[in-house]
Image 1 (cartoon, one colour):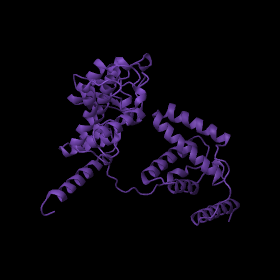
Image 2 (cartoon, rainbow, N blue to C red; image 1 turned 120 degrees about the vertical axis):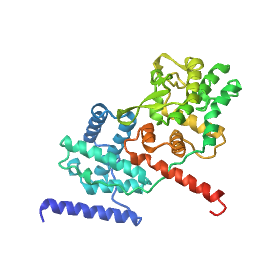
Image 3 (tube, rainbow, N blue to C red; image 1 turned 90 degrees about the vertical axis):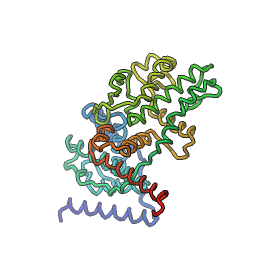
Image 4 (cartoon, rainbow, N blue to C red; image 1 turned 135 degrees about the horizontal axis):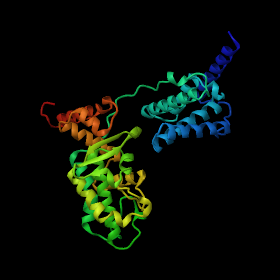
Length: 361
């Protein structure tokens, strides 16, 4: 056995010993503070610039990939006690196992593995590591997870909640934006009504066009073609697609732009379609709050997110007879396999209805 092979065998033995001790409730060797080595900080910053400038990834993707790369480097230094050029498949699997031990589910582990493979490919391309160990990294197999969806009636009640609030004409003391009391800070009905009109437009667009929340907040005034009843959307990987928008959603958008947008918008909003509390472009977190609070207003007990509306829209299309290729284009999926989950959702709902209603079920 060569010296290098002996060292690798010794490291493997140490990993196994640490893992056994931890599973048995024992204490591993003290772990240094989980702070990035200054050399790794440089690596992370260059990787961030690569993802942002060279790969053109979205801010959300850059943030997620950088976070995964950071935890991997911390694990490499503090748990594996290895230098960056020594990164191997055993260290990667150990890192992924630590993520699982921390409670990460199979979907999260799959995303972590994908992020790690992107990181190690870049490390190899920039000659920071001699071999791309990430090519051999595989996450645990994912079981079939059927996304939660709303019924058509539940969706209608949720989407109508802000419209009913706007029609009520209550003052700011009674009517609050679904994003919280901080948004209602001016006397009179004008601002409260503007907020309700905006929330109605948000919900109508999410359900009508099946958008991701990141796609929704990126919409500009020029993204909508009312004549063709379409939206021009920039999705994952900066891929552009054109999706239909329904008449009720167009009415909600028109009401918002005619009577609400100018009440909230400040110069920094630019051409943004949807405006947030401080007058700039509406943020992702605010959209989540709008959906969550509107679901409560509609009497829906379960937790509802913007993605729930996207899942619901796709499922309702499939149940209505839409073909999968059309739904794939509508959602902006790169693979038809991703879209096929909605046939399973539809089948599950049919089976549940059958078992409850058929006399010989």
